[in-house]
Image 1: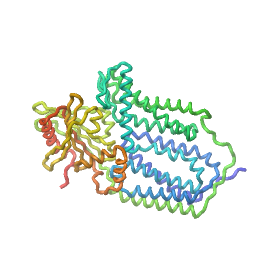
Image 2 (image 1 turned 60 degrees about the vertical axis):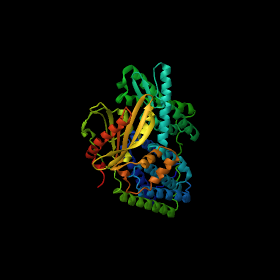
Image 3 (image 1 turned 45 degrees about the vertical axis):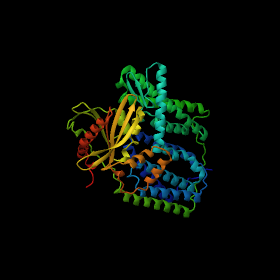
Image 4 (image 1 turned 135 degrees about the vertical axis):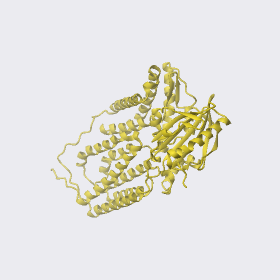
Length: 535
C-alpha cells in the first residue's frame, strides 16, 4: 500500500537551513583558498561530485525505514557546533593557517551533519549518505606535515626511476648526487615540486573514489581501487618525466616548457584515469550501477519527538550565533594585506654593480606561486658576478610550502660546507643575514639570504619552526601551538625572501655579497615600504 511522504515540520526545515548556511560559509572560504592555491581550483569538481552523489542517493533513502538515535545524534551535533564556533573564534584565518582552518571546519560540519541525520533518521541513513559526506575531504589541500614528506619521496622516486629508464632507452643522463635533477646533453631536466606527482595523486585518487561509488563498489572493492590508483599515479608521473627527457633531446628545451609542459601533464592525467577505469572494470564483476529498488511503497517519515526537534534547532542556532560573533570580531584581525611590489623598478646599477634582468622558468613561478618575483644578475667593475632573487607574497596564506637554501639547493645535489651569519648594515638598521657555503663536486656556491614578514627579519627560531612544519610529530605540535598565537603576531604580514648568490667561494666573495646586500636593502625599503623598520 502506497503511503504519502510526510514533509518535515517547520522547525526541522529551520535546522536544515542553518546546516546549509554553515556549509555555504565553508564553501565560500574554500573558494578564497583556491584563489591563493590555483593548483587546487579544479577541486570544485569534488563538491559537484558530492552534490551529485547526494542527489542520486535520495530515491533509495525515501524507501528506507527510519530509527532515530536522538541521544547520540545530539552529542555529535553539539560537538560539531562547538568545533565550528571554535574555528571562528580562533584567529587562524589571519595567521597563515587557512588550510588548517578549512580542515577544522569541515570536520565540525561533518559531525554536525552526522548528528542531525542520526537524530532525525537513524544510523542506516547515515551509512547510506556516508560517501558524499566523506568525499568532500578530497577538496582540501593535504596537511603540510604530510604533503611535504610525501612530495620529497615522490620527487626522489620519480627522479631515480626516470634516470634508470632513460639510460635503458639509450640516453646519456646523469644525476648529481641525490638531487631531483637530471643532466642530459640537451639541458638539465628538473623534477620540481609541481612535477613530483602530488597534484595528480590527490586528483586521481579522488577520481578513483568517485568511480568506486559510481560502480556501486562495496567498502572492500572501493578501498582496493583507491589503493591500486596510487602506483598508477606514480607510474604515469615517471612516464611524464621520461617523455619530457625524450622530447627535450629530440626537439629542444622549448618543446617542454610553458603550454607544452601543461599539455603533457594533462595528457598524463587522462592516461592515469584510463588505467584506473581499466582496474575498476577488472574489479567490477557485477552490474555497472546498482539499480534503484522498484517499489511503490514510500515509508512515512516520523516527525520524531517535538522536544528533540527544538533541542537540535537551539544547538544549531547557538553554534551559528557564536560563529557569527567570532567572524565579526576577527574581521579587523584578518588582514591578508595586498602587496603591490614592482621589483622591476630596482635600479640596474647599484654603485659599481651593473645588473641584467634574467627570465624566470615558468616551473619556478608555478612552484613558488609568488605575487612578485625578480631574478637579476649583477657584475661589479672587477668582474665578480652575483645573482639576486627577490620573492614576495601578499600573506603567509599565499606561500606554497617553505623554501629555504638548505632544502632547495641540496635537492640539486649541493652539500652545505659551512654556515654562518653576516651583518648587513643599512641607514635604518642592521640586518642579521644567514650565509651558506655549498659545493657540488668541483662547483662552489656562496649564498647570503634573509626572510622578512613585514619589517621583522626572521631569526633562527623562525626558521626552525618553519622547517619543523615539514613533517613529523614536532611539526604537528608546532601547528597546534600556532592555533593559540597572539592576534598581534606578525605572521599576518606580507613575506619577502631575499637571496644573493655567487658561483664562487672565499672571503673576498663573502665581502662582495655583503656589500651588494647593503646597496640592495635600502632600495627594497623604497620598493616595499612595508619592509621598513617600525619607528
